[in-house]
Length: 287
Image (cartoon, rainbow, N blue to C red; front, side, top):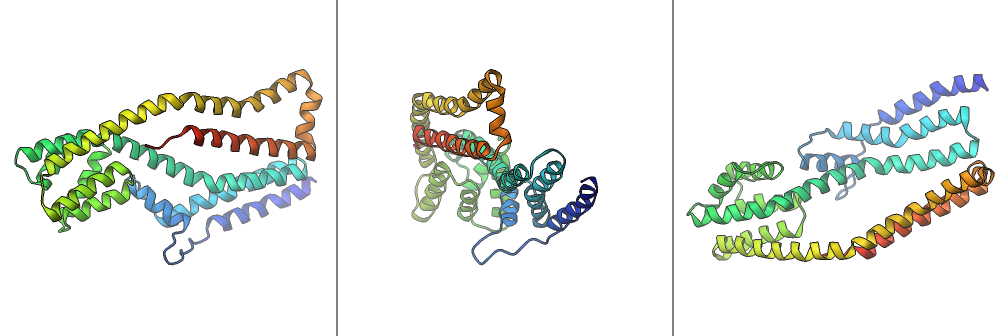
C-alpha cells in the first residue's frame, strides 16, 4: 500500500501540472469562455489579470482540490468516500472563482448605487450653475470617492479621446447593469437628441430613486422574517445531526461510514439547499 501511494503521488502531481499549464481555449463566436468572462469582469473592478492567468486560476480551483482529496483518500478514506468527495470538490472548485468574482462585482455595484444619488445631485447643481455636461462631470469628480470616482474618470477619458459623452455613458451602463444607471443613461441620450433641461432630468431621477429606495427598505423590513426562517430551516438538520451524535454516536457514525448513509446525507443536503434558496426567492421582492 505504501509503495502504491509513493507511485501515485508523482502521477497526481504531473496530472495537476498538465491541467494548470493548459492553454486557454478560444470561445465560440458570440460566446465567452470562463477565462474571458473572468478577465473582463475583473477589469470592470480595475483588477487587470491576463486571460492566461485567469485560466490557470480556474484550472487550479477545478483540479487542485480533487487531486488533494485523492491523495488524502489513499491514506484515510474508503474508495467510495474518496470518489464522492472528489466529484463534489470538482464542481465546487469549478463554481468558486466565478462566485467570488460575481460577489466582488455585486459589492462594487451596490457601492456605486449608494453614491449615485449624491453624484446626480451634484451634477444637477453644476448644470444649474451654467457648466456643460463634461465640465459638470469634472467638477463632481473632485469630490467623489472610489468606485464612482473611477467610473467618472473613465467617462471623461473616453470623452477626451473624442468619444461622445452619450457613448461613454452607454459603456457605463454595460459595466454597471442596474435600472438606476439605465435610467440615467437613457435620459442623457434622449435629451441630447431631442433637447431639454438635463438639470431637471437629474432632479427627477433623484426623486425616482429616493422613492424606490423607500419602498425597497419597507419591503426588506417586511420580508426579513422569511429570510431568517429560511436560514433557521437550513441550519436545523446540522443541529439535529450534532444532537444525534451526542445522544447515539453509533447511529450518527453510520451515516458517515456507509454508502446508504452518504446517500441519505446527500439527498438531505440537496433538499436543504433547495429549500433555503426557495424560501429566499419567495421572500425576495424586486422593486
